Amino acid sequence: MDNVRFNPRLADIVPYDPKYLPAEHMISANESPYNVPDEIRYEVRKRLKRLDYNRYPDPLANELRDIIADANGLERENVLVGNGGDELLFNTALAFGGPGRTFLNCPPTFSVYEANAELTGTAVVNIPRLPNYRIDEMAVLTRVAKGDIDFIILTSPNNPTGQLVSDTFIRHLLESTDALVMVDEAYGEFSRATCRPLLQGHKNLVILRTFSKAFSCAGVRLGYLLGDAEVISEYLKVRQPYSVDAVSQLIGCTVYENRQLFAPAITSIIMQREHLMEELEATEGVHVYPSDANFILLQMERADEAWEKLYEQGVLVRDFSHTPMLEDCLRVSVGTEKDNKALVKGLRKIMRERRRESAEIVE
Image (cartoon, rainbow, N blue to C red):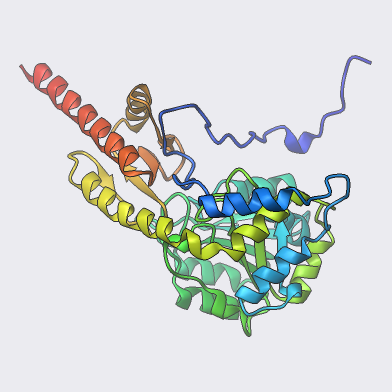
């Protein structure tokens, strides 16, 4: 038969598009601009020589779980490793969502959260952020008081807006609901903040972290959860077997054991962020939102046109200008000093050209 019985649930689903394009200055995907330190790469190569490629990997990556647990004052049962944070986010929707269940979202935020809910048939309640992109805390607490929310995801710092969620609010939320509350700390290392102390005494808290950002391993695909052992066991029911391959596990162990070697790069990114914000704020026509992450959200007129002109100059940033609640916004990752200078130079050139065009029209 020349036909296929497609799933109607997918009819209106738009595939996630990271807008990956080649460019000289890649500052669109919130990756670290620095590679893994040479010492770690050398150690990985040594360990790879002893790897049994013909054997299946440890299905739960227990060696890596133990290393992460020990560093966080937890037990193995409090940690779960996944194929990037993305797998763990989807598993959250599988384990705690589904038909008849409800997810609370705070847009604008990472679009994958809502997409996963739609894919799993989970109802979505959106509580929009305030005009300054802070969470509308009272609205969230009022909504969860109805008692029908099954899981909530808060990103801290939030992507793409950059702000931390206050520990006071997270604590109040945890004490106000029995819904699972995931705090996505993918960018946490750049804020020097974590809600990890709240794990004690709050069974409904789970923290998501990743190797993709501060640990320079976006190409490896490793993420992990910290949470109550009973909550983690629910994730075990829905996860794919062998989802984390043996090579990634080996790299993850080596990276995490030597994570102190990433401190200089993290510090450099934080310093570059502060300098870049100052340069952007000094650029006429550009509004900059405060950031605790390794990226900055900025707003300007005709941002989509600016995106195109920046790309023509070899600078790739992320265009959110047609996204609801992010109109006329671009998100720029903090890159190397060279990357950041190219961005500022490109934006200022665009603004000069616009002023010149305006002057010509007036004449």
